[in-house]
Structure formats: C-alpha cells, structure tokens
Length: 135
Image (tube, rainbow, N blue to C red; front, side, top):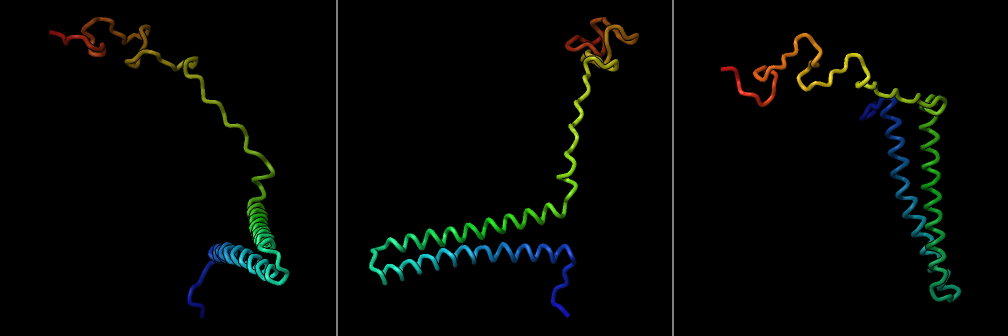
C-alpha cells in the first residue's frame, strides 16, 4: 500500500513537478559537463582556454534546448486539456448601456428631476442642499 494516495489531478501535478525539477539538473549538468569537457580539451591540445569557453557555450546551448523542449511539451499538454479555448474565440464583450439616453436616467442629484411631481423647489425642502431648516 502506498504511503501517499494521489488522485488523477495530483498525479499530473506530481509529474509536472518532476519534469521541472529535472530541468534544473539538466541545465546544471549540461553546463558543467561542457565546461569540464572544454577544460580537458584545452589541456590536451594546449589551446589556452578557448575550448573551455566553447564547451561552456555548448553546455549552455544544450541546457537552453532542454528548457525549450520542456516549455513546448508543457504547452502542448495544456492545449490538449483545453481544446475549446483555441477553437472559438470569446465573443466581444457587450458595451455598457448609455445611461444618459436611457428613459430611466435621472440627472438630478437628489434622485428626481424638476419635472417629476414630487419635486419641491422651495429653499426649505429637505432635499435641498445647504439650505437652512424650516423654522
């Protein structure tokens, strides 16, 4: 019986974690092997450090290729999981309604217009701002 039990989703995440963690090893080892191989060739042929740099560059290129293949594989896997997202683009969002031309629009600051029947234009109206209260 396993120590941990992962569902299908947890297993996928664990596999992705494994791929990403091996990427660090691949990058580090490819650069280190290229560098050490270049040093060995420098000592063998007496080229004075030129092949060390060539080996380092080749190791760096191998690590970059490994990173590129991981990104390509992950992208293909993500597109396989969501095929509908590429097939049909999202429709354009609806524009917001134009409230100023709407028949329900009221431009007055108190919630009613001057033409409404409950509008009180007296200076002592409770809705009138900065007016003294009724005596």
